[in-house]
Image (cartoon, rainbow, N blue to C red; front, side):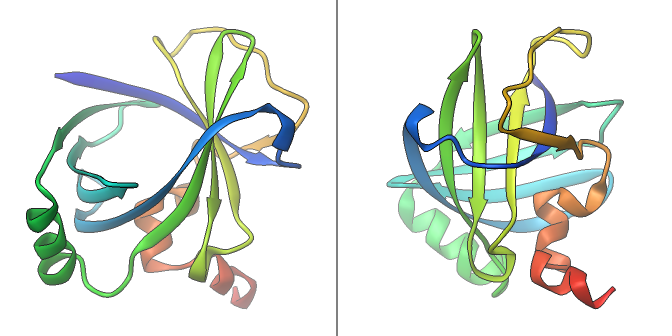
Amino acid sequence: MAIEIERKFLVKTIPENQIQYSHHIKQGYIVSDKDKVIRVRQKENDYFITIKGNKVGISRFEFEYPIPKPDAKKLFKHFCGKKLIEKIRHYIEYEGCTWEVDVFCGENAGLVIAEIELESENQEFHLPNWVGSEVTYQEKYYNMNLIKRSFNKWSED
C-alpha cells in the first residue's frame, strides 16, 4: 500500500531550460467522488489503473498498476466517457526534489500546475522562483474536478 503526499502550486513561468524530460498524459475517470477515485491513464505507451482513497490532510492511499493497452482502450471507451484530461508533464529537479509541471490541453488549456510529492506531510522543501500560489486545498484544481468543470469555464463563474 502506498501513501501519496503531494502539494500543488500554480506556475508563474515554465522554466524550459530546467526540464529533464516530458511525457504526454491522457487520463479518464471511472469513479471520482470525494471519497475515492479510480482512474485509467495513458503515459506515452504505458497504461495504468490507479485507485486513490479519500484525503486526510494532504495524504491519501494510492494504488497504481500497469495494465495492457487493449484493457486501457476499453476502459477509456466504455467507462470514462468523452471527457478526458490531456496534459504534458514536465519533470524538473530542484534542490533534491522532483517537481512535476502539468501543462493542460483542450478544455483546460492555459492551466499550468506544479506538484511535488513528499515523504511526509512535514517535509521541508524550497520553492523554485517559477512557482506561484499554493492550490493544494482548492478542489477545483484536482484533475477529477477538471473533468466536471474545465478551467476554460471558470471565467463564467
